[in-house]
Image (cartoon, rainbow, N blue to C red; front, side):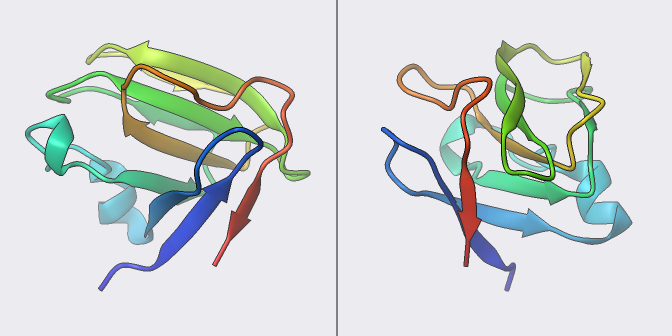
Length: 112
Protein backbone atom coordinates (compact mmCIF):
# COMPACT_ATOMS: atom_id res chain seq x y z
CA UNK A 1 0.00 0.00 0.00
CA UNK A 2 1.53 3.37 -0.98
CA UNK A 3 2.32 5.90 1.70
CA UNK A 4 -0.14 8.80 1.80
CA UNK A 5 0.68 12.33 2.88
CA UNK A 6 -1.29 15.55 2.57
CA UNK A 7 -0.59 18.88 0.91
CA UNK A 8 -1.90 21.71 3.05
CA UNK A 9 -2.10 25.25 1.74
CA UNK A 10 -4.16 28.28 2.62
CA UNK A 11 -7.43 28.35 0.71
CA UNK A 12 -7.23 24.72 -0.48
CA UNK A 13 -8.86 21.64 0.93
CA UNK A 14 -6.30 19.13 2.22
CA UNK A 15 -4.97 17.24 -0.83
CA UNK A 16 -4.08 13.54 -0.37
CA UNK A 17 -0.77 12.63 -2.04
CA UNK A 18 0.58 9.18 -2.90
CA UNK A 19 4.32 9.24 -2.18
CA UNK A 20 6.36 7.81 -5.05
CA UNK A 21 9.47 5.99 -3.87
CA UNK A 22 12.17 4.14 -5.71
CA UNK A 23 13.47 4.66 -9.22
CA UNK A 24 10.68 2.83 -11.07
CA UNK A 25 7.80 4.57 -9.27
CA UNK A 26 9.42 7.96 -9.74
CA UNK A 27 10.21 7.37 -13.40
CA UNK A 28 6.70 6.18 -14.23
CA UNK A 29 4.85 8.70 -12.04
CA UNK A 30 1.30 9.04 -13.38
CA UNK A 31 2.00 7.29 -16.71
CA UNK A 32 0.00 4.22 -15.68
CA UNK A 33 -3.18 6.29 -15.29
CA UNK A 34 -5.02 6.34 -18.60
CA UNK A 35 -7.49 9.03 -17.52
CA UNK A 36 -7.58 11.86 -15.01
CA UNK A 37 -10.43 10.32 -13.02
CA UNK A 38 -8.33 7.36 -11.86
CA UNK A 39 -5.12 9.33 -11.28
CA UNK A 40 -4.22 10.43 -7.75
CA UNK A 41 -2.15 13.46 -6.83
CA UNK A 42 1.44 12.38 -6.12
CA UNK A 43 4.48 13.61 -4.23
CA UNK A 44 7.95 13.02 -5.66
CA UNK A 45 10.64 13.75 -3.06
CA UNK A 46 14.25 14.67 -3.89
CA UNK A 47 13.13 15.93 -7.28
CA UNK A 48 13.47 19.20 -9.17
CA UNK A 49 12.46 18.13 -12.70
CA UNK A 50 9.63 16.09 -14.21
CA UNK A 51 8.62 14.98 -17.69
CA UNK A 52 5.20 14.49 -19.22
CA UNK A 53 6.23 12.18 -22.08
CA UNK A 54 3.58 9.52 -22.64
CA UNK A 55 0.96 11.18 -20.43
CA UNK A 56 -2.69 10.74 -21.43
CA UNK A 57 -3.75 14.07 -19.87
CA UNK A 58 -2.42 17.47 -18.79
CA UNK A 59 -0.84 17.98 -15.34
CA UNK A 60 -0.73 20.70 -12.71
CA UNK A 61 2.71 20.84 -11.05
CA UNK A 62 3.94 22.46 -7.86
CA UNK A 63 7.68 22.64 -7.12
CA UNK A 64 8.59 23.14 -3.44
CA UNK A 65 11.93 24.19 -1.92
CA UNK A 66 13.55 23.02 1.34
CA UNK A 67 11.76 25.79 3.28
CA UNK A 68 8.37 24.55 2.00
CA UNK A 69 7.92 27.57 -0.26
CA UNK A 70 6.42 27.07 -3.71
CA UNK A 71 9.15 28.07 -6.18
CA UNK A 72 7.31 27.22 -9.40
CA UNK A 73 3.79 26.39 -10.47
CA UNK A 74 2.91 25.02 -13.90
CA UNK A 75 -0.75 24.43 -14.73
CA UNK A 76 -2.15 22.47 -17.62
CA UNK A 77 1.23 21.09 -18.71
CA UNK A 78 0.74 19.21 -21.97
CA UNK A 79 2.24 15.77 -22.69
CA UNK A 80 5.77 15.75 -24.11
CA UNK A 81 7.28 18.46 -21.91
CA UNK A 82 10.09 18.70 -19.34
CA UNK A 83 9.54 21.16 -16.48
CA UNK A 84 12.04 21.96 -13.75
CA UNK A 85 12.83 24.34 -10.92
CA UNK A 86 16.44 24.49 -9.78
CA UNK A 87 15.67 25.24 -6.10
CA UNK A 88 12.97 22.57 -5.70
CA UNK A 89 13.44 19.54 -3.46
CA UNK A 90 10.07 17.95 -4.21
CA UNK A 91 7.25 18.12 -6.72
CA UNK A 92 3.52 17.62 -6.39
CA UNK A 93 1.76 16.40 -9.54
CA UNK A 94 -1.97 16.21 -10.08
CA UNK A 95 -4.22 15.80 -13.11
CA UNK A 96 -4.93 19.31 -14.40
CA UNK A 97 -8.25 20.68 -13.17
CA UNK A 98 -9.93 24.06 -13.08
CA UNK A 99 -10.13 25.80 -9.74
CA UNK A 100 -7.81 26.80 -6.93
CA UNK A 101 -4.24 25.60 -6.70
CA UNK A 102 -1.15 26.79 -4.87
CA UNK A 103 0.68 29.91 -5.99
CA UNK A 104 4.34 30.76 -6.44
CA UNK A 105 5.85 32.14 -3.20
CA UNK A 106 3.19 30.51 -1.05
CA UNK A 107 4.29 28.45 1.95
CA UNK A 108 2.79 24.95 2.08
CA UNK A 109 2.91 22.00 4.44
CA UNK A 110 3.18 18.31 3.69
CA UNK A 111 1.87 16.27 6.60
CA UNK A 112 1.34 12.63 7.46
